[in-house]
Length: 345
Image (cartoon, rainbow, N blue to C red):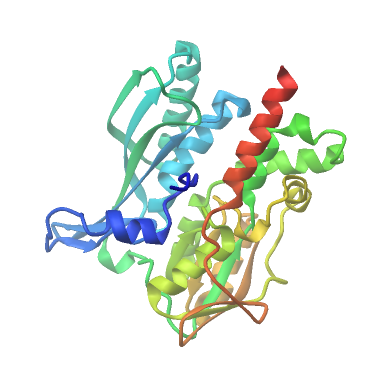
């Protein structure tokens, strides 16, 4: 028996083990779980209730304030791509025994500040220390957004003729996390200014602002956060969900400073590496300029990268691209964690 791979379950695992066992079949559930889809939707009194669940991901090497900022935004980002304003959060902390009260206070203060800024109310949760718990996965949370169904942006909404907008570019999360965690290992092989540029990507790791801007600016038909599998994986999932094809050109897509240097050092392909913070959106052609202008006015780099067509699958620069499967970030993280431990011994 082969050793299970790290990272999010692939579609085959989802289809075999998860999808057949979803409990009661309720008429008020409007969007059920699907592999590669960020959120689900229920009808509550005629209003759309979008909900999404993710791990609480804390990386102490980033510093607890910075790590908590990222953890909070991970919990909110998937529901933000529904086009509805995030409103509620339930969060569970299963903390490692070594975390101090002061460190947790920093985490929770940051959660509270970010929640207040986004208008999110934390309504329930659980907190405790437990043996056997290790960073970075220290719990989980569910975020909820409410609004009118007419404002809901569904993940399967891409239509032939739509344009495809990509913000920020590839490997934002892979660059931000790996460079912050392993900057000492990069020294000597990567110029200092490139290391700094790579670590600066940390605060790019949230798509919430651009999702809300895009949904307000123009006729957005679908949105997706380019998490595991990166930009290519996210685009493939959007096309598959809508039953259409995507034709993409990489030249217009922005690549942020430090990304290429970090991906070269860690030997990962930026286009298939986790990119929390990169928003993928399909937009009615009449609204593309409005969406791009709104993003630009807030200093968010974005580009019209291609079009939605009849058919199926993803074509990039004229080449058919399959879903990348397992994200190379996890193997890189494991490899360089061992190197860091060896360096510290």
